[in-house]
Image (cartoon, rainbow, N blue to C red):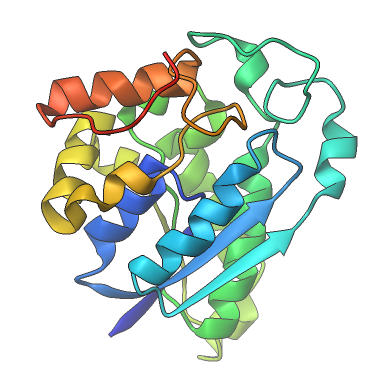
Length: 224
C-alpha cells in the first residue's frame, strides 16, 4: 500500500483526516511540540496514534519556535487572551510551512507519495491552510528533491488537505465519525490547557458548531 505522512495534532481535523485516508494509505503520523499553549494535545496525539494504529508516530520537538514567535500569537503566548471567535492573533506565522517542510523530509525518506494536514474549507481565514498555499508548498518541496525524483530515488510528493476537495469541517467530521466513531471524543481541540475543553475559545466553538451541523451528538465534556 502507498504511504502517507500526516501532520497529526491529535485534534478533530487531523484524526478525521487519518480516518479519511486510512483505506488507501499506510499512515505515518508526525506531531510537533512547537511551544504550544495547549501542550495537552501532545499526550492526546500519542494516545490516538496507537488507537488509529498508525504505522509510526513521531513527536518532533521544535520548541525553539516559541522564542521566535514571541508574543505575536495567542497559541504560543500565555499572556494574551484567547478569543472566542476568529481574529488574527490566532494565526501562528507560517506554522504549516514549518510543519510541512519537516513532514516532507520524513516522507521523502519513507518513499511516501502524500503529505497531508487537516485544513478544511472553514479554515479559509488562515493563509497557510488555503489550497493556493499547499499547492505552492508542494511545488517547492518537490523542486528541492527534483534530482532524486528524476533519478527514481525519491517519490514525487502530493500535499493534500480536505480543503483541496472542498470539504467543510462538518463534512470531514461526518466522514471521520463513520469510520472511527466515538474515538473522536478523545481528540483535543481546545486552545487552553485545562483538564476539559474550555468550551469558550474559538476552536471549541468551531468544534461545537461542527457537531451540530453534522447532526452528531457531541459527547465532548466542556467546562462551559
